[in-house]
Length: 513
Image 1 (spheres, rainbow, N blue to C red):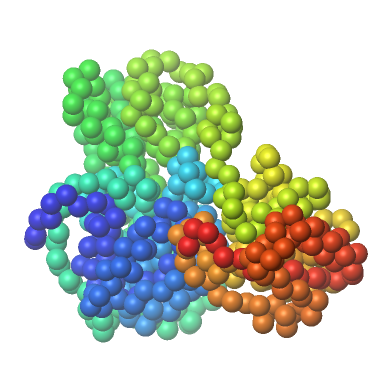
Image 2: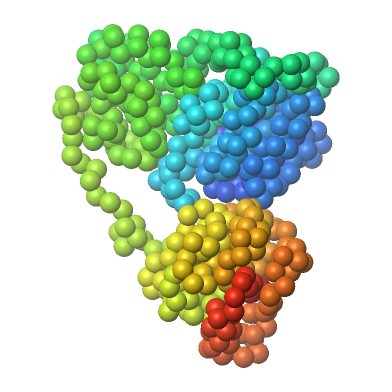
């Protein structure tokens, strides 16, 4: 055991990975995970682990599964929306079984500070039937990650640990175990006997052998802490809100009679533990972020308060939200959080005014509809540019535009193309769609920290012979912005008249990187 002073949650995760002897790490950039991933890259040194950037979460998960089945502990780092793609191999891995421990580190973004949605990764525990750790403090994060690898090996399944930006930045003295129990070649490899079972048999095996291990963990884990202070009011929480509640209960006398069940393992849902806590209190309030995950498991019980009763807002939870909820604990419903956030009242986050692709956005202002993507171009959707109309998923612009009448227009960045957009392009060509694809080639993932992107121009040319490449930086330098804008308008008008798939590659250097 060693003590470390003033350790952030981010550093605690890094130290836990070292002490768990993680040997293979895959990562996809995106807030709030980019800071964690950068820390692992910056401190790699002689640490002994391999770490790799991936453009796609499904591929990242599959690579880490490959490391697991060959006896290397592995970790996948993605933001919450990346769980959607990653879930494909995850679902099958639960029945397939794994080898050495594999942990998915999912970074959630309550309040959607830098994301296209505000989804809650805890639900993937229920969907995939695996364990989800939801730590509240840096020490919890350190201990949880260590335990997650052990649990993964015991149950032979991937395990999820959810974190948020506030946990990454939170600071605490850390007790480091330095156990170093796991070594390669210790027998934690894939057991091929699973192939003696049918697919249905694999599912049966999971419920008979693996699931009881996971349920036992959730019901008896020391990460689920219960403190009883009377029988009137009980608070149930998980994740970072637990730290807020602990701070209030330990410093304000008015709350000294409130009990607290802090869940550090939320999946499988610890039904017996939670039921025991509920039965000991008259009123229960659930304090969690982003969604009403815990609340949804117990909402059929009487006197359950939380987001659904209006006591707490959707998304991120702050100290003042908790205080308001506790002050109104005697009310069955509350109507407070009814305002819908707008760009006007939050503040605009426009695209850079000197972006090299601004001439294109000015042209697109007068064209409808235009499918946008989850790169910088999504910031051109609101006023005043109104350049793109849709933005469903990273890499999704091309497939979305296939559904437009006439010759659809898709605007996609080079990272979005490499992430999953290339699949949409293949389908567009194979399906005989009329489509103009405008690819913005700046060679960086500008929204996630400036990571490099693969150059797919030759691959795209092989798919689409009708491909035009324009260096917009050179055009602006030689002809000016207005002439470049006029040239792009004429070219787009001409390409919209042609049948089949056309590609317009616009090259420009991002001014931020």
